[in-house]
Structures are given as structure tokens and as C-alpha cells.
Length: 200
Image (tube, rainbow, N blue to C red; front, side, top):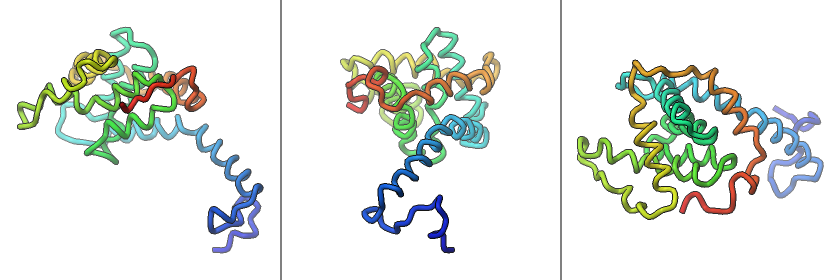
């Protein structure tokens, strides 16, 4: 299909041949795409309803309950939204789902929150590693890290407890305004994310 006559299509077939006009067009489309990120995240969360099987709750229900527990524990909005999206990697990155979720939220929250999401998979091993023949103490390597307590709270109080069908869990619509607020922020605003490396 020949799109060269379409003014809404770039002229190049190699990036190094693009013109100023081409990249201005792409910039317009990228800004529209970024603006729609909260919509795509809402859809991705909804899709967790049909994700990993075997639990008493769907992955969506688990995510909603994690966020509900964080909210009930008076966590701030960044941690609540982190609890909501922490398992978004389950479908596309089942072997490193924590890292994928951390990359999704990193541009929009303080480094401490990104670190907790990034490390939650490792910290969770303390709760079930013994039953699966895996190490339970890997998280202790980070016991002197300044955000150790944040991740421990995230995992112990919210994530690992969020499998209870009887817990008063709020629906996705309840958390939607919070998600939209966080993911509509300017990306990598130093006033929000700071200058610390959340992956160290």
C-alpha cells in the first residue's frame, strides 16, 4: 500500500532520512499517544480479569484489593496507584513482571515508589518461597537500603494479603481518577521523580 501521498504519513523509510516536517508530524502523534496512556492502562487492568488462573481472585481483583488495602492503610496516591498496577507485567513478562511494572510507573512517581514496585517480586519470596523450594531471604540483601521498609510494607501489608474474597475491595472505577492523575503528570519531572536512581 502506497501512503506517500498521505500528508499524515512520514516521507522516509529510514530514520536518518526523515525531515524536520516528518518529525514534527511524529511528535504530534506521539503526544496524542502519550495523552491516551491512562486509557490503555485502564484497558490493561481490565484484561487482568482473564489472566493467571488458580487463585481465589482474578489478577484484576487482586490488584484492586492491593490498592484498596493501600488506601485503607492511608498510603499516598503514588503508592495506591503502584499497588493497583504492580502486576500489569504478569501477562507479557511473567518471569520479570515486577520490573515491567516499575518501568511503566517510573516516569510519574518518586523513585522510592518505583523501587518498591521493582523489588516486590523478590520481597514476596519471603511469604511463599519455602513452600516452593525457593530462597526466602533474598530481600535481606537490601535490609540497609533506605526504601527497604517501603517495599516491606507494600508486600507484607497490601500485596501478599490481597487474596481474600471477603475483603471490601473497591472497583476499578474508584481508582480511575487516581490512575489518571498520576499518569497525566509530565514525564520525568524532577520535582516528582527526584534525581535518585530507582533501580539501584
